Length: 326
Ligand code: DAH
Image 1: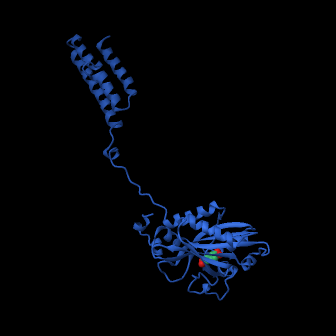
Image 2: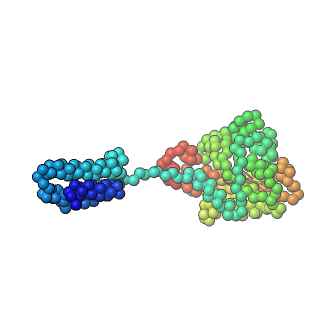
Image 3: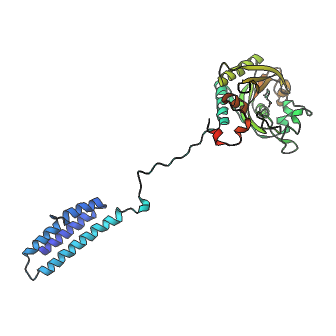
């Protein structure tokens, strides 16, 4: 083969090889194959010695041009496909980004604990409106017109007949309006009271209401249920006491206190009682057939007693030093 044909053939081979290569390591291999000391192009230079004197300059030029072309092509591959701008470079040694994860607020955790305890003994979970009419919050619950609980001091009014609910007991009425007995529900939710703020009282707080209606419901069942709850929540050794009390919607009524270790005194956590027949009359339940018990517990106070939190306001001021403890 003449040198001219050899040049052509090496060039064609190179172009075929080059088409299959896309990165700098491929380019390095081609450099090796064509341009190294024993490369195909270098070998062509060695053949220059056999060319006649007059033809030498021409072939010398052709070969130089070939070498330049090949180099250019290989270098272009270097810079197009493989060179990443500084901005796009990934530094694999950079420390990872830390995404701070939130946590469940201690009040929500307490609600979850309460829901779990009652769910396990057959209570369903229901919710109701925080803004309600006077009827559901008071009248239907046998709270008479002149009752102090209706006093402007205690209730936030939205309108003449519309209130921010003062307790979750309003949902007792909604549930019984919607469902036929028997029923067994707990109702977690937020309630509002326009009362003096202290370490254990705030203008808004959370309650979990309980309502059980069936044919043979007794006070001893209520007692058993709430004692079971207190043991699960606070442990078997926590001191607990029952006090007779009064609520318009229950008869008889009682309150439960838990011993506050920090203050060395009792703290009330719930009110309860047997559903007053007047309440059943409001929702059209037959008072000769149905009996019920009900309770309403304060979630903040339960959380305070369980976790040694000494001020209810801590739940609401968003101080992460407080929140991080739980
Ligand atoms: N609603 C009462 C309160 O907020 C608590 C309560 C007492 C709820 C007795 C009840 C109950 O269901 O039977 O103070």
